[in-house]
Length: 370
Image (cartoon, rainbow, N blue to C red; front, side, top):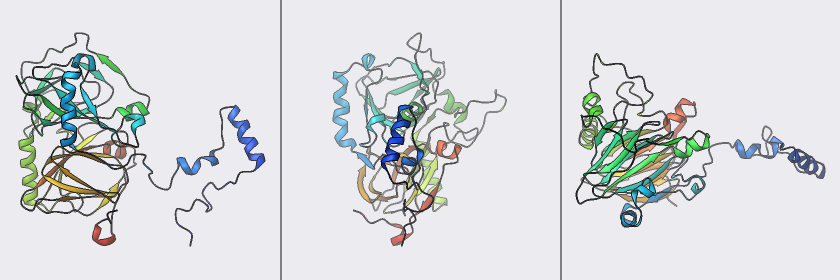
């Protein structure tokens, strides 16, 4: 019986080489041309064939090396002192998965990084330390553990740590590989090296963070969220409230998206972010979708099965799910919930009409672990 994905069937490129064709290909190559049928099946596969592979980074193992960078590299020399996480299949573009970059940035006590801006959009998820701050287009934000913040593309931004004795570590997430793949990168250093922050700290949170929209102000028209910071405490409470009123998703547990309060959509045009909760002992069913995801363990411990491979995780760990890879999650604790933060390229998939999703229906919705 012929497989549905058989490349020898009519409708697929199935031309056999001959001496005459090889000579023809050589003649085309001399003119920087080629025959489509020689590559058609590779560049138009039956379904997504990501070069990225499932990967897991242990925070417990990485943390000492992240801290080791503090005395080795000056922040002013590095631009940003970051240990990047690279997927074994995407080292060529410094991506963690697909066309998404992530890394762990450390700032020493009292440090202040200079300001710059770039085409790439960025986001931050704080892992440790209580003194971190960022200034985005003149708005100063203070962030602590499990807080989420955004740095939309084209905005001036700088970071620092006002703690007197404790380093801060946060996770950076950027769409740098996507921007570079589209040949659209720009980068500028602030002409004054540092911004002059506004008088009110956390002004975007004070203005847009109350589940009510301000009336009478100039209408926000930029393509990203006017709310730049999402503190952990109200985020976690929102998850718990939803868990009390809804069963949630069979694939993602109780899941919520960090939203642009004006549109209700994603916080930025190229990346969105989610926070999800798994009840004690919960094991979700598997599904897959187009679009790549980087997960960070915000709370608890458990495991995920990705493309048939099991990855055990605990707080601070980071792991990734490539596009179209089956995945499911399990909370290992029978008395406490577990929470995952994640960011992804779903806005790109949806805006280009590339989004597709399907459930794993065999074996009760659970993969066989290899």
